[in-house]
Amino acid sequence: MQKNKSNDTSVTIIDEEVCMGDEQFIVSKTDLRGHIIYANRTFMEMSALSEDKLLNINHNIIRHPDMPKGVFKFIWMTIKKEKEFFGFVKNLRSDGRYYWVFANITPEYDVNGKLSGYLSVRRKPPISALDVIEPIYETMLEIEASASSNKIAEDNSIDYLQKQLKNLNVEYQDFVIGLFNSQ
Image (cartoon, rainbow, N blue to C red):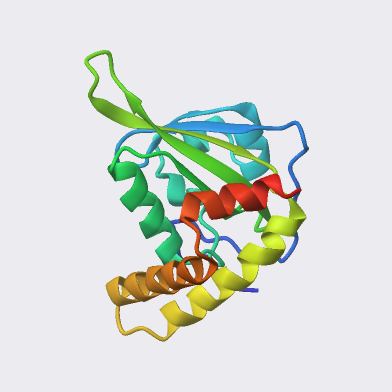
């Protein structure tokens, strides 16, 4: 077992998956810095965290160490451009177990049209998609582990992902949506 060092909590990682129900949706809203301002009951249930342990806390509280840093950099690069993001994410529960989601993150705007935060809706991903994504993420993690700094790790990791997409002749969003729809 390993400790999660991606956030301020000390959670012993347990290699045991908790699956979402087919009809369940996790919904959360964050401010521009990624601090949670809304979490639905399914989010609380799946993360094994109460509302008071989630609200006003950075969303990285559920970051699993099996997730490449490059993926999160890619997410932030996408949503900071006020573009919609789709992707597969392995999340950490407070009890050390994990759950996979297919995430959709969209920008939210205030009444004046100014970007005010992000809305994320997550659902259960198909196993067939995870069979494709997990080896990619594992290689990205290996690339990151061999880098001399976090920035180089993230950049090299994203470069690897982009090369895989180029070899498949597909854009990232089309790739992940295709994997989700292949169920």
